[in-house]
Amino acid sequence: MRWKAFAGCLALLGLTLTPSPAQAHGRDPGRAVLGAHDGWAAAGTGTTGGSAAAPDDVYTVTKRSELVAALAAHPGAPKIIQVRGTIEGNVDDADRPVGCEYFADPAYTLPSYLAAYDPATWGRVRPSGPLEEARARSQANQAKQVVVDVGPDTTIVGLGAQATLHGLTLRVTGSNVILRNLNFSDAHDCFPQWDPLDTADGNWNSEYDNVDLVGATHVWVDHNEFSDGGNTAQPTYFGRKYEVHDGLLDIVNGSDLVTVSYNRLHEHDKTMLIGNTDKPTYDVGKLRVTLHHNLFSDIGQRAPRVRYGQVHVYDNLYVVRDAAAYTYSLGVGVESRIYAENNFFRIPPSVPLGRLVHYWKGTVLHATGTLVSTGGLPRPADLLAEYNAANDPDLGADVGWTPSLVERLDPAWAVSVLVPAFAGPGRW
Image (cartoon, rainbow, N blue to C red; front, side, top):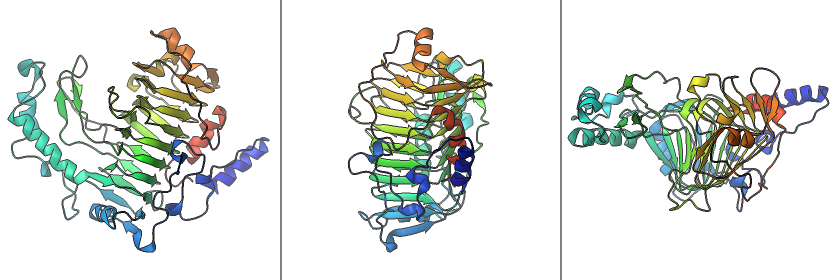
């Protein structure tokens, strides 16, 4: 109904847009499959998830133990897992919510950690010794509960617009997986590690993402919401924010053939990493990812940051409100080949256009059809020319490939309306 109302408004203007199959289908969302041309995940055999699941392999889950049991049931069989309500990850074995102290090793406390590794006395040396080992054990205790593995031929879908995985990391390691209509919220690390050598001032580094694709292939991530769940106010230690979050959606370790569509990613810093190492051990020829019709709102950086992959970034909406909290959007990493087109940026006037792209040892970027609004009417922008005018070394324009798996390429002016209307849970 939302699409029909919107399409009617466009018709009054003499314009016509048609919904993608992901929006147009009228059947059980758990049985939906990716469209035949909808991005890299449609290549080859396509992505069908658990759509072929037998009735006995359709599960409705409301708590962590049920989710884990459903994922482990009937190995090798396609399955559909329907999430109802909020599933909390930080729980004990009886699904009772617990705090960070539940996972803490007896030899660890944060005050003792801060006292031991204060750079004023410890120096610019990475933490080591019994207290650091106790922190690592504490982190491992939490990981056993909050990191949940997703195997092959699986669809996980939310029932209604409020289905939530809170404090959990879904680690997708299998092939042919679909994640749809879910709210991923606040995958937080209770035991961040201090690294005095991370940047000139040091940093607190945490362990968990809301979703990790780890060596996964043929994955469709569609109509979800990713955020820190409001858990953003953290103290400062050693002059740096005590960072309890890592990424929202990371695609790493040779993952391949992935489509990320119609998602909302917001209020986070390091958002999406495609390729997690500069060393070409398993990523060359992989990390082929399509990002389309996603909303990146109040994101600090990595939207996405890419190494190696052929990544198609089109019809996405980028909204920046706080210039001080913004670093960049497109990260051009080692041997990356980003093909960006018809994206819309809504940014403060104080953000220079050359800042929308960041150099991470990459050499090329294709960027066409971009529109930018700084408060008034949108205007065309040449992201490559703007970057090259403000930075050295220059990036080249030839990425060596042209996307062919595109179901519908919308004009950039329509992105600012389509994406808010249809991205996120409950909006298909």
